[in-house]
Length: 94
Image (tube, rainbow, N blue to C red; front, top):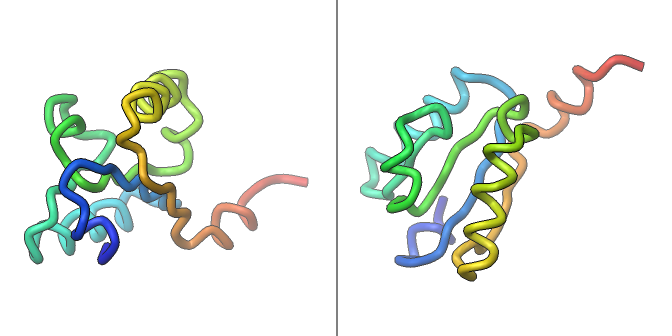
């Protein structure tokens, strides 16, 4: 969260494995004054926040891909962070 806090115009995407972790990250950001939205929230907050938190299943949708493309094209996407990635990797079937 710290790098995102120092950026007014840039966006950090944080991918997490569960909805509960998504809400936890969002709550922690809001508690320290970082503009944050969950991808599942209404669309308006997505364009004015510093951090977008998204669960893995939503991160692979076409809507999210289009959102990332817009942010990249406007040079607003600063970083993508995969949190708890070991859980995402271990949950896939062989």
